[in-house]
Image (cartoon, rainbow, N blue to C red):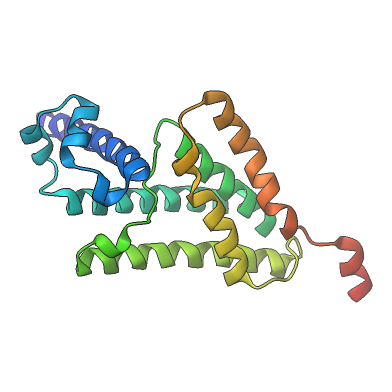
Amino acid sequence: MAQKLKESRFDQQRDRILRAAAHCFNQKGYSGTSLKDVANLLGLTDPALYYYVRNKEELVYQCYVRAAALGREAMEQAVIDGSNGLEQARLYLRYHIEIMVGEKGPMAIMSEIPSLQPEHRDEVLRLSRKHSTGFEAILKQGISDGSIEPCDVRMTGNAIMGSINWIPKWFHGNEALAHRLADEFPKILSRGLVRDQIGAESND
């Protein structure tokens, strides 16, 4: 029991560190952020921070792995909850945005992948591509079930994912804006996906 409690506290503090680091990296970039910046933001000493990460490269890598895990969590839930491809796409966007602007945010923008060590870079690229492939599968499902207009799923997926991935860059914690983002962005970004039923019927 004591060991589980210790692990829980470790995980909670580690998550606080990764959220603080994501904030710093999103605002200052990799080269402009130091471990001291992260420690100062949390009120920690440098040695306390080094208990969780060995260096800045490992810190940004862990931020990216966390971001990928949260995105995967949002997508898996959307696939479970959505009745068709279009609804799954909209729910994924909502769930992912809610994570970004909610208590689990901020998430790190994956803009510094070239700064990672080769093995970390390859792992993050693999996770990123897996996530993109998952969203493309949702689009394909929508095209198949008739809820989404036929489209180039790779191009469409990149356009939509690119729009939400940069939210942490300009969102700064306004609660009212957070609710608007979760409500409006999925509608805006999925509007072009909706199949024209009149046109579809005339083609059948």
